[in-house]
Length: 259
Image (tube, rainbow, N blue to C red):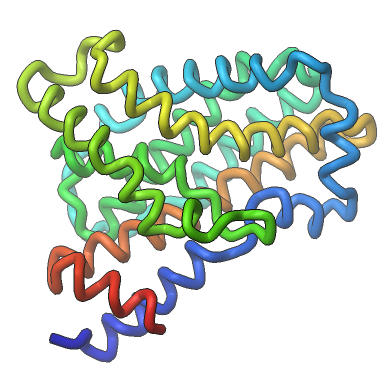
């Protein structure tokens, strides 16, 4: 079976989005400041704090953002409103500096997850299913292409394959007991896996905001780039999932690699 012409165009669009340069490249291109300068300004123990903040943000987001979504598969996504909201939190974070990240990140992540779920719904996902909710969380593990990436570890389908077992176990647990226990082992394992990849982008965001000249206005710009990046990842991801429901994963993956 081959993809219909319109579906093939959508697949090419999805691949272009998913392989768009990563967040660091976008920030550097827009601000004209190499992200490495920001990393040099971060405290020595910042890596551990980023990891902890990222896991906390994802845990809070998964229990807050998707639960209020209503099913309306195919309804257009409201990406602009979410960008404005995240820009506002970035402005506050930029004004107060790095110490505000622990407060700002959970809020930004929750808004982004809500936007991701909105995009999922626009690509005909039935958003109140466990599978769709976890697919929304998966988006945070998708970083976009980077010249330093190992393609065998960072490719779109490679990331999904790496998460597959944890997603399956979390799906089974939530289907049986519901999304009520933050300490559920299956959910914790999935969050840790996703946080390991998401924390890379969070570190790049923090590094950009560490540059003294950034301030509140720059913080808003960085957060706009942050959510724009993950909205692109979400659009590509849920186009692929829509096509997989129609053609099957094997055909879609083979065509994705071939185009």
